[in-house]
Length: 390
Image (cartoon, rainbow, N blue to C red; front, side):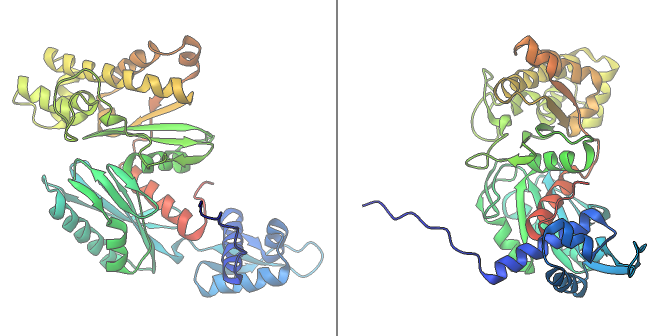
């Protein structure tokens, strides 16, 4: 016998009130400064309901009155303003060679940043570094905290805050969100770092804002964040964009256990490892970039091969999704326009010419805190129902 279908449940009074409060807050956020009468017209709520809800938001420190506006014949309206510092939040980027974090306000402005070297730590030691980072940022908070937004590498179940699998950090089925919620008594949102970077590009750096967007982050690993119809697309198992562990014909073993993954040829870590093997003086990313740009023949061969592999991986994304805006972000972008042109050429050579002509592959915004900002945007959206898009 099949289970009965679950029927829709009528919203409770509290659910309705929460929804309406988010509606009012969103109107103030988007229209600052505005009046109660304007909010009633925008939302369709009664003036009595708007006044009641605005009163709660003022008491909560998220909205404030800033004086009277111009009169249209009657009594001048009292203007309302959204308070960006009514709450602060903690945003984290758990990637690359360090864990980075920041205190962020409700307009996405970074107020304080902190970076702790990873120094090869993984597993429990990496988790302890997360706790150290959050504790340090929380100690600096001067306003009530909204919560914690995290961008982390690997497969992340955003619904439960679980890191299902992260090869670089040696985490499997780690309930990172619940752990931090229990420790700090705050809401926590965890998402993939490349997906967070895509949200940041969409929210803060793209004007006009595209409906569809692919952001590919190339650093220690490789991953893509996909925006479809203005929304983050995570896939059925939250693994949409895990292109770094799609394998081809290579033989090098990847951190995931397979051989020939894209990361073994096109990531900064793999290119640096290969370059160090031919020239021991190249022991960090800056030296790799300098050797490539100066014409070091063997290093150029390594980087060019990596760029072509990345381009080959991008081609199916163009063919399957037909998304016209593809952005490259992360440490590999320091390799410059020549690297970008090689990626483009390899991608466009493998798709329909018409699609190639209509697709832009470009550098994204060179913001060091792109993952922090994306995770912060996701937290603000989930907890307050706001969109940082302006």
